[in-house]
Length: 183
Image (cartoon, rainbow, N blue to C red; front, side, top):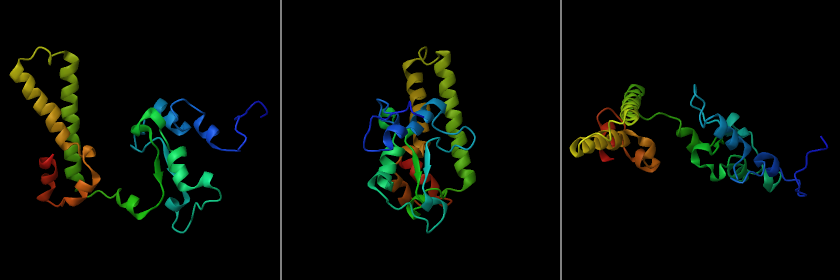
């Protein structure tokens, strides 16, 4: 294809991966912006980079040049630029720390219950906002609404909690409620 030019004499792959978009985002992040940050069925981030170490122990990406090293891949290939963190690439590098992040520490049924409660509160909040009923409430009703639908739902949203804090809490049967109470 003779009509394509990167205007980059260093033979750098970044003009192709980023398209030189003003946001500084990689093409995968731009695709995620257009299609949605997460796959609607699997929930997997649409911008995902899987390096050899994540596929098979012993395989190594190596570093033939600084351009293709893992730090550069995390920054440039999976970068979201100014699009924000929802579009930042998930780089699966096979590290033990990263793999342990995928282990559910809360029993699945308890996690499902919390997730369902969060969805119900979110649905109620949307219906009330859409119906305009929030504006017609008295001051006391408004405070109760804000407490229940903004404060309580945030308490159950553990994605807003620092992972180090979550790791300090025991998620066994009786201790699982300590973390949301703390919030």
